[in-house]
Image 1 (cartoon, rainbow, N blue to C red):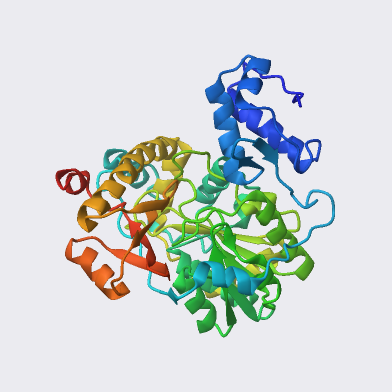
Image 2 (spheres, rainbow, N blue to C red):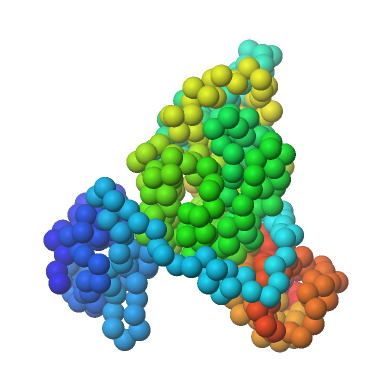
Length: 454
């Protein structure tokens, strides 16, 4: 098999991205069909006179997003996208009971937490400079109240940022700014309460999403989460009108929803006339692959409500989050606009707008990836040192927490207390026999604490 691919060596876009996008599009339009074997890395590199590393990076991204699969000693094969890009889609007939039994057996624990970011990760000199510029050059602005929806310049920059980094399709008019995801979810719940009665939430997942829906009178249904995201068959039979999901980096399991399942989830929303609330938690922090494109950019039926925040990529002290509404909900939002005052600081909104617009955020993202990649490599050794035994890393390719497993006869409370006594917060995701899966945030741990203990 040979791709009709011509690398453009003069383009600014790296060749591995060009190859990745070419193969991805060939699979999407079914030029490369389900089960068709791709040429080997060596063969592709030789054919197009490019390095093996370039091909490896392209294939790795395709693997990460679920467009291809790797079979040991056989090679790479195109996955089935279930005809989503024609007009019909199906949902896998996997038994929800089987999925739940497989991934959630024995015990589940609800309490999960994620701590601070790395001290010194944000360049406060740049932030101060921009903040002072707002105070001096925009003096009239600081003596007036802010826009209910959020400052337009920030909504404009966020729109460009999401489109560039997450593959979104957004306009400033769709964006609502607020001080935290919970505040924005409250606005959303007030908007859709006459249309939506039942909300599906990930289990295990972000507890507060469930609480907010229940506080607004919604019925909630727990949908089990496995290694590739929430169980779609369980969602299909749940009767939900809206589903809260975090497909790019699920907390606490760290699971990544592959492209085929994403497309099936979108088909569920379209066929069921439901909404998907996409929480893009920690999605930009990936160490070994590109960030996986968001659902919002794949949505062809205007069903995605997108939630994003700067709390983890910048600092939780900055309570600035945003919600991107589908066009079909904009009139609903305008109807309740006057009910909510703006909860986020106008001065910080303007400062963040310049931080994004002048490109500082991209430099910052590169910096924190280096920081957290180093921490990720240390955390396994650190945990094994504390535990005095083998610890297996399950998920740590992205985000600011890792999922690990260890074997123990101890009760869950003793394991949590053991690590707590060492100053490390761990949370139990699930237990299977004598094997525990734990979630641990390493973002707030200092290098000194990790390195001096080894």
